[in-house]
Image 1 (tube, rainbow, N blue to C red):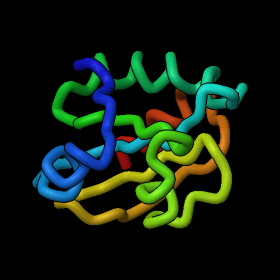
Image 2: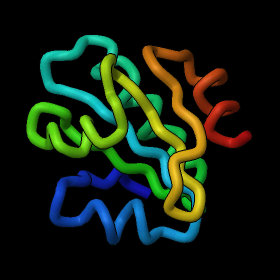
Image 3: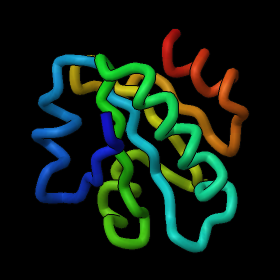
Image 4: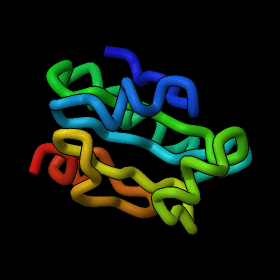
Length: 103
């Protein structure tokens, strides 16, 4: 499954109203570690189609970033049943990232 782009117009439907597990990647175009983690998130999303993977550009959607207190990027937030339950800040290797997503 592809990583979905999330913005203010589809956040509620894609993340908040989603009854399953959602991984939301906060990123920016200028962020080096964000560019490093993006292909890992894409690979993991393809291996786990039961999980919804999304990304939100903090420069384009500062209100969403502020709502979740994003101070550093990349930050991934795990949602379950529409509620934020955990977060991972900074770059992580694929094995560590996948283990965090699946726990």
